[in-house]
Image (cartoon, rainbow, N blue to C red; front, side):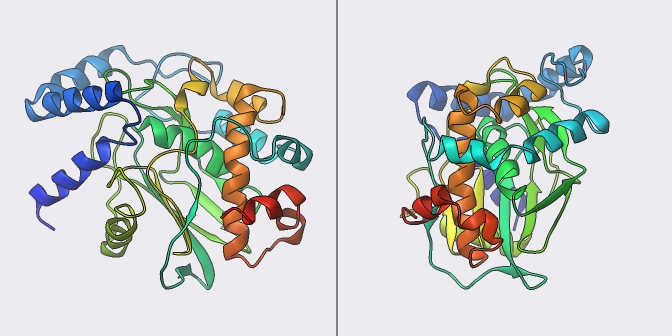
Length: 296
């Protein structure tokens, strides 16, 4: 694929989930900055003023926080009680959910594959990673996940606290997780998708599966279900929070964050249970998950 074609496809992805006209205008303004070369100057300014904060909070960071701080956040996510997920159920504020897609089963190492394609700057990817990390933690264990914030203005929902899957690991008896973070917070190239991954996105991240073709995040659940056309909920619910605050809120079924993030995670768990033949049973036979499976 030529450089011009590659850039054209990435620009299309930057117009993610344009759910409001204001978001579309902001995306177009950002594209003008990129075309005019102004993004270089903006990145230089950001590099001067950005300060990487610990989990206690702070402004957006182009660098990634690793180590014990990041591990503590991921562990907090993994320890969300099953009773909390059950209490939240389908949740509130859901704007998207996995849908059935046709295709040859997708596997890696003999296990069904969950393919995630996104970018670190993307606020909708930022929101979805919380739900996806919570969902996949019911089936396996993460390692090396970092903490970042999505891009600042003029991006919509600037500085959303989130995780990054770049250089992370995941082990599971039931499912393989393949993440691709294609660009950094400052829109620099990061990971390159394979030809097969690009083909899947070209096939499913398009009509009739979505009205916003090329949008990210794009999640393919073994070519049987897909989260296509944007995040499960609006990133605005995470505005102004630290990573620890978000992770801790996930265990409180009464919190607005849990009602949206846990609700989204339950829908993702339902899709993953479909592709694992409802294994493990203690996760997939929960009444909430069985009910949500019926809606897929």
